[in-house]
Image 1 (cartoon, rainbow, N blue to C red):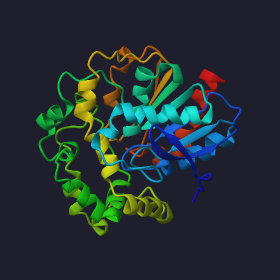
Image 2: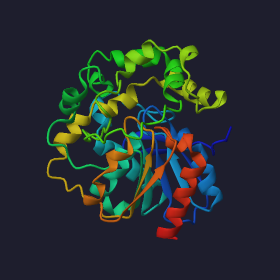
Image 3: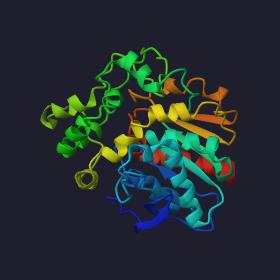
Image 4: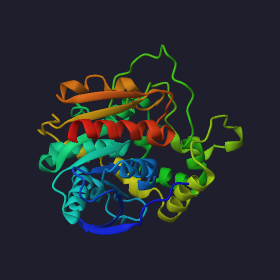
Length: 331
């Protein structure tokens, strides 16, 4: 298993954040790697090693609510202003003017927001699986409810009873056994679906994740795990300690973020790269259609035979693309 660099801490934006850093301090602009749900900075272990060995400075935080970083109690402390503000504070602590922000899954939503809210701190953006979209025409939770129903996991996350948190928290190993596997190949004739609140899945896809985990038995799952046993243990140990509520609180701010984004120009005016995964059922490559209308300087790259956990499923390919793009666009 790849070893992570030493864990460091910073006081930023009212919380103590844990982060990892590697590569030459003199390298600019550094790349800040932002994980998704339910993940950790550890999800970038392959890229931290590859990029730093290529001479690129790389920084990977456990984001607010995850791992070694604080988990504030108020739900509104996980809105987009807080999440982007945490990254600005991290740059301030490290004396960094601008960085390239790389995000996967929810981390992708965060990094696409960085140039909209903190343009002076952003040299470039890389989204992995997660597309950049304009502000939705209605409350995103209601749009998701209308398309996928009340059992769709993001809709369930809004339930004040926090039953989803309890299900995941009482079945931590089952959660990572179920999630961290290679998916079945996406049918070549699968139609492109309209992107709703950033989600491009077909309404036919089962997105009732809490119920899926509650009924899950790894003995009957033919899919191939993407984690080594010792890698899975890192996730299981961390989420057993922290629970899932911190990360789920990001979803509980989707309506709040939508309201507060009214009037915000969603044009991204920095060099950008969109890495798509061929077999991601929730964020298929078609989710990225039309991004060029919002991002004048956009490149796209497709990772074939990969599902949602792209930087862990295809680590060498993702690392190589990040290195190639960074060197070509920034030296």
